Length: 247
Ligand code: NAP
Image: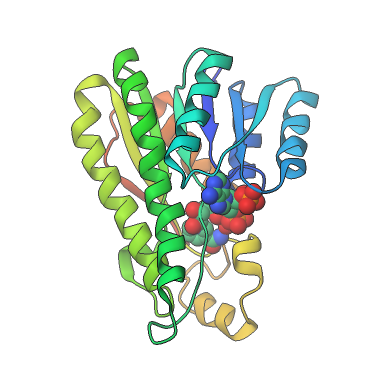
């Protein structure tokens, strides 16, 4: 795949899946915008790795849950590289608890980043992408947004919302050649999952026919495909990357 002359903006790209997506786009020639919120060093390390391999990248700070910061992130990207061809809404957080113990802040925080943040970013790329009559948006959802998960009412609601948003924007943007898809990972080995107790991990593993947890690269490959010219007739879809957890 070749993404030369294309600009990709990835939210939450200093670590985990977002970092893997950024490095992969750097390898295939894209100009990469590495968004981060807390840790500039992580993001700058991603930028350095891309540049050392001959690629082009910059790191931009923004809390995507903040409407104005999301807008500034889009504007800075366009000011630097002239356009946004691909937006990957990857940033996400968890605040897990059973409903009995989940407080309002835990719900609000997760919805603010995962759902409102994704909406904020989509909102701000809408006009430029529709105007340029091309673009690909890929939202990182989750398997639990499709099947539910005890202890994650906030996270599951946010990811189910992301799937609904994806399907709706695909219908609104299709006529202007802007595609909107989602990738729904299963259990992927990142810092989001590394702190789960061993018993919980065993519980998940028992539900995975391929009998292993997913890697960042497993998700990256699906994202690259959806962003590429191999997927020009695909929009409004959710690609499951979960080892067979659900059909
Ligand atoms: P991760 O390692 O915790 O990375 C999450 C990233 O999101 C971090 O880089 C973080 O940036 C960024 N972020 C958080 N809040 C942000 C905000 N308000 N604005 C901008 N960036 C923000 O998690 P991950 O496992 O790679 O998850 C990536 C995506 O995949 C998430 O949407 C997650 O829900 C989804 N997912 C993960 C799994 C899994 O098993 N790991 C499964 C299904 C779906 P800072 O480091 O700067 O805070």
